Every structure is written in structure tokens, then in C-alpha cells.
Length: 409
Image (cartoon, rainbow, N blue to C red; front, side):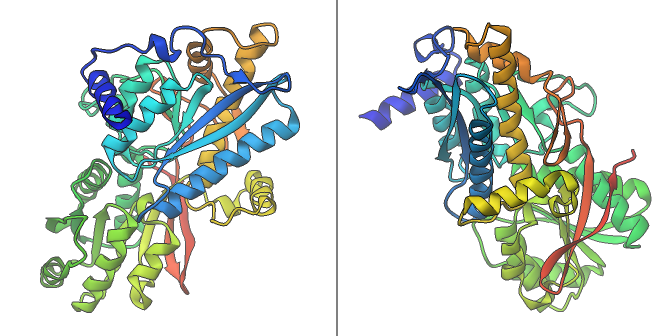
């Protein structure tokens, strides 16, 4: 019965037929009593906590949790105790939308970190925006999420409550193309994607820039992300004469794809976006993965002075999982929400107002601080102002940074 009710609410939200006044979006959304005099403010986290992308999802959850614990330890917002509630979206847009409804219904939730996947974000944005509940993704790179489907011709912000600390595929795809053509001297590419929002978008922006530079696309293919047999695609890559493969997608598919391409006799590197930059890719790709490449948002956390305290605190906290590719960005996303809550509390005489969600969303637009990943602030679309990208290569069984910069287009 409860599940059916949730599905009904979700359907009504999607149709625009339901407002969430009863859920606290227009009053009363100011946290809950902790019992010790403090107000509990919950930061929701939506990410894949199980399944193939759980390594990244758990890193997102843990890093947001660390931000909340750090703010509490510092007593950063007087009278407020932060806690994190994480929900598993299972990489499914429908589940992500149900999670969004759950977060909106909890009056103590004043911000949400996540999701990991752009396709999941598409299903959540309107739910949060209708409730004026701020959402900050540490990982979404799909351009249309902030700039609209026709972003190449006219950029239009879609939802005022949506922000991200990761840069977009409008930067990441072309940057990979510039690196391959200008630095790695690759001229013939075979482009493959998984047909999902993230993968197809990334492959598209890469392809456009690679052609513009003078490179040749010698083949294209779409794969089924549910499959593990890519032998037919690998054979096409081998016969194409490509000197590199570009893959738009994530590591559960990229690893086996790379392995099977090499097994087919095409001893050429595979390069992908931030969705493949995880140690699991190397395990799945096997011993021939040396030389495979990935771009990822920002600079390597391990090389940033600004991240040293984060890494030390994460280790000291004893989390079982690594912070993974988006840990620093997740911490900064949570901290942006915390800073916005602090601004709202300070402006309201030391307490949260009844319309805290709307006020926190508005305050997030003007947040600016030195975070784990560098300067954190947002432009008029809700996009990160930090647009640095790094290229990593697999060397001796580990990802190693080989090139860093910003896209010039």
C-alpha cells in the first residue's frame, strides 16, 4: 500500500498536478527538534549505494557525511546539528524520482547532494524545484540539466534549485579531443557510447571537437549497457584502423569493452570520461589496460593542497570505502548547502525561518568558498565556475594524472 501511494505521488508530481504544501515546501520546512536544544537539519544524499556503480556512490555518501560531521564538530551553525540521510537510486531514474519525493516529504531536509547519474537527475529536478529544495550534484555532467536541451543555440536555465560542483560535458568531451589530437597525436577514432544521457552527450561533444580539429571518426557504435559481450564491436574496432577508442559511458561496461577490444587484436588505448575513472575499471579491463585514458573533472584531489585535510579526515573517520572519483566534489556540495544554511540562519537572527528551503536555495546561488577541490561557486546556470579538467592514464595498475588544464574553445 505504501509503495503504491508513493508511485501515485510520483506520477502526480511528474504531471505537475500535485504541490507539496503538506510536505513542508511552503512553510514549516525548518528542520526538526534534536531534543537537546539544537535544530536537526538533514542533508539528503541520492546515489547508487548498491550495484555496479556503488564504489562511486558510497564515496559520495561518505564524503557528504564527513562534511556534516565536520560542521557539527566546528559548531559552524549555532543551534543547528547536521545529519545525512542517504537513499539508493540503483542507477534508475524512476527510483531517483521516488527518492526525491521522500526527501521533499521530510521537513528536516534542507538540501540534497547527488545524484551520480545525469539520467537520474533528469527525473528528480522538477520534484525538488517544485518544493524549492536545493540539489547539488558532485558528478552530473550532462549539459542540458542546467542549460536546456537546445544549449548549443540558446542557453536557458532549467531549474533554480539545481546546482553542480562538477563541470559539464561541454568542457570534458572537447578537452579529451584536444588532448588526443594535439598531445597524443591520435587522428583516427572509433566512438562508442551506451545510449544513456551521460554517455551519448559526452560522445557527442567529443566527436564534434575531434572532427573540428581535423581528426577522423572511422566508426561509431552503440552498446547495450546490460550486455557483457562486446566481441562484435571489438571486431569492428579492429577492422576500422582506429588508433584510439573513445567511449561515452561508465566503468562497468568500459572495463570489459577495453579488455575485449585488446583481445580482438586492436592494441590501442580506450579513453572515456569521469564515469570510467575508478579502480574497478582497471580490474575489469585486466592486465592490458595500461595506456587506457580517462578525463575527470577538476584537478587530482591527491595533488591539491586544499584537499590534504579532507584526505586526512576521511581516513581518520574510518570509512570502509574509498572516497572515489567524486569524494572531494561531494564534500564541497554538502559544504555549499551548509554554508547556505549558515547564511540563512545568520540573516534570520540565529534561527531558521519557516520558508527555510526557499531561502537556502536562494543563498546557494551566492555561495563562494575555498573547498576541497578549489574555489567553489556557481554561475548564472547553477554550473560550477571551476572548469579544470585532468587526463589520467593507467600506469602500473593505477590511474596517474598526465595532463591538466581548461578547455579552450
